[in-house]
Length: 65
Image 1 (cartoon, rainbow, N blue to C red):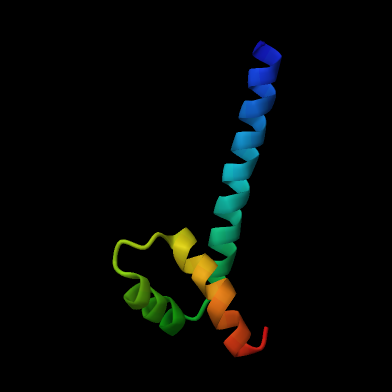
Image 2 (cartoon, rainbow, N blue to C red):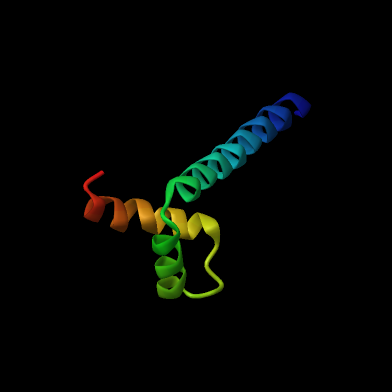
């Protein structure tokens, strides 16, 4: 039982770390103007992860990436 919980915990932590890496990478390479515009569109309560997802889905297609 402890082994199963440990394996589950490791996968959860890897998922969280991967999500954080993704968010940081996208936000780092995003132009500040795009960040500000997305923040205005989604609202002030939008998380960096939500902004990164929106940027990847909408803005990258406009920029030709």
